[in-house]
Length: 176
Image 1 (cartoon, rainbow, N blue to C red):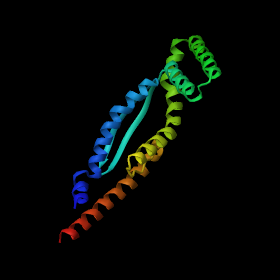
Image 2: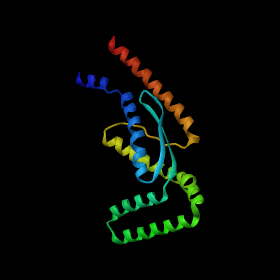
Image 3: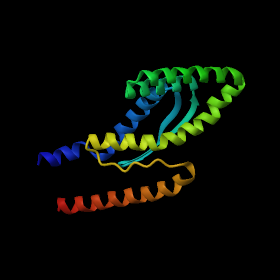
Image 4: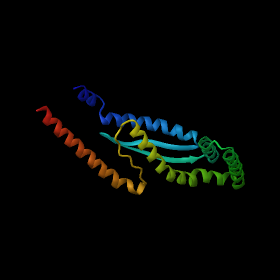
């Protein structure tokens, strides 16, 4: 009986609501620390179906390189790796100076966001899947490019609504 009460208290729709809010607050801050300015918002939620939009707006090339250097140095604990990444950092600073302010702006606001967003798709998918598994949350996580979103969205929404109807029908039978 306690399990039934608990399941009624914490519905999957409530979990989706809290998760959407938490992700949209937390992830942009974490990404900003790595030199990534992102827009992230919950664009749709029905029952336990949650859609979040993430767009990389700006990439601070120096901050991104610095964050990766720190991460890489932590992983290797190798003095040669630290020296090599210091060289890379200096080379990046020199290149940015050479291309000029206008080109650096174009690089950080157009070219790099597209490249970073493409790489992030795999990384975020892995991270989210791992986090949900550790918390014992069963979730179907998908990261899709714009051209694939509509077809996926409507099929998933149809599935969610059918599941909700089935749950409602089975709940009515239990009450009878």
